[in-house]
Image (cartoon, rainbow, N blue to C red; front, side, top):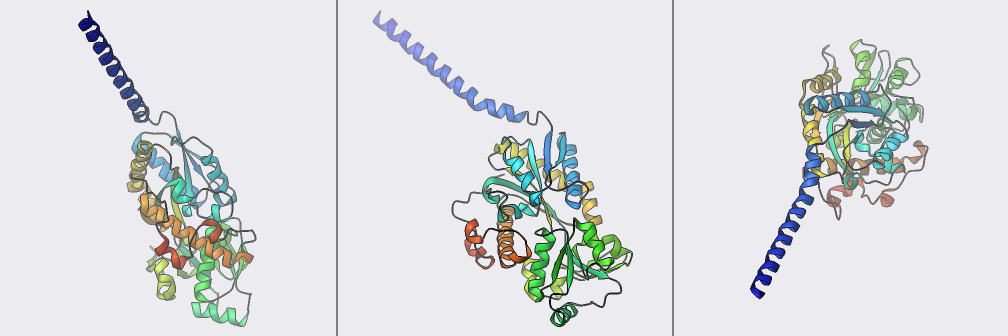
Length: 368
């Protein structure tokens, strides 16, 4: 009887262990099964700028091509405001399930510097870069300004009188304009407009002496000969399909060469604590979108430079650009018109210290 009892207990123990192992296996497998069926509803792309602009147009192409490649539905939803802060905070408040992707520009580097969020790009987000546009300064055809030396001479003879349009105070063209002006050694007056189109027309119509912005925003007026390009901020000259050459500032200002190209960057961001399998699904669809003919065609037509980055490379670039923004915004805070956080408050180095600082203590790349 004792042997039978002992045998029964042994069987019960084996049954218990087998049941526990099965339960454990089910516990491990269920999330994978759920993620294997992802997405089970449309994926929202929350675009941080208004409909119709360059960022919105390019991100819609990316979303559409991601949907085509993966068989998903991707819904673009525009939430403009606070240089991307409204869209950023909306996505941060959503579950980390991959159903809300932040459609961003410029690695979203302005929002923390401007105090609109406390989220840290390389800690709280997985970043995928698609392409860069190129900064440009252009003038009306009859402008007497033809060279950078002309800008320096005019600024010296007429302090504070040189006017350059931007698409908005504290935006990317304002920031990059300040970086370029600082390197040239001029102190212009920045004139903000509500978007790239009116900023481009400002130089043509004589409201400002120079149209700031991007090559893609000046393109049609350059093709028509109504604007003349002073320079653009890629590393090389650009030859338009009309034969017009847009000279690179690399050949004019030596100190800018290491940080070229200067322009807007187009990205998508996912909350970093989203399950890794879902992040990989999104990355695969994103890579297919960047490789699509539709994406290549729009980039070629607008003279965008395709540059796919993810993982540590994207994190590093995001951190470097935020370091740059914090530095220039603090040095020229009087031109920003709002309080900005210092590099120390943000835990950032100076641009000169960045190479020694990266990667920061505790940094962990996402392995995709």
